[in-house]
Length: 286
Ligand SMILES: [Cu+2]
Figure 1: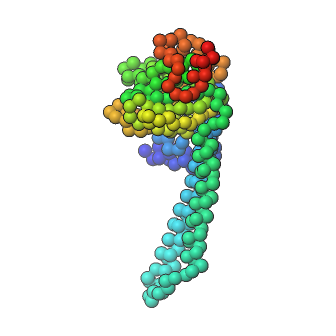
Figure 2 (figure 1 turned 180 degrees about the vertical axis):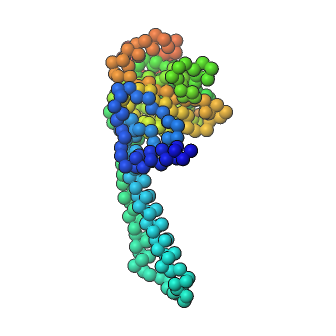
Figure 3 (figure 1 turned 90 degrees about the vertical axis):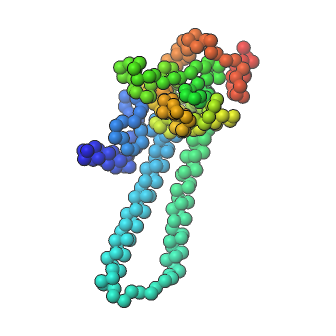
């Protein structure tokens, strides 16, 4: 137990002082490890920025906590009753009051500037190379590739008794969503029934899929590999059984996969998508 606690605390301290980023393997597997306390390694530009912002905020918190703790200790010792038999009746001090109003405002402004920068960066990409549409259902995900002739399929969790060697429990699905690595991908999210949330920690994506509206974000997966996430909005009894598995492939392998998936899911292919994305142009061009 102490050992685990030590590992947890040292991971946090290491996490606070360096940017782990780039794992060296050419294929990564991104999911939480037992007793992990800090973030998963950031694997997209947005995730890297959020990770760095979090470390920055953590240091500001450390400085404030140490300062307040020191101040409390100083007050407890310096102004203790024993050493001050007749207490001072001082109440106001204008310069001090200006200072303790001004400094927190300054700290908030210092935090707001990088926060807003990251928020706008994560919001949308100006040059998407492809679009993925994510649709939440009770209780599975539907994926659509409007740029690839409306290729679409459902993604269900694999029950425990059907798991194969190496497939993580409660995270594996029958049809992973396959995406090209090192590509700017526009993500459009919606839902067929209730509000779900497509949460992928290592890419720093956590966006509600809301019935009747389309939410947009984007990603750029730094490395090929397996990325695991979950529905992150309480959506009903099987909420904990709608995992997300992204299989990120090098671009050339992705194109091969698209060709085979078009055959495998031929019966699902939808033309004239219901979203005003490029599929309509693609259908018109045929
Ligand atoms: Cu859900």
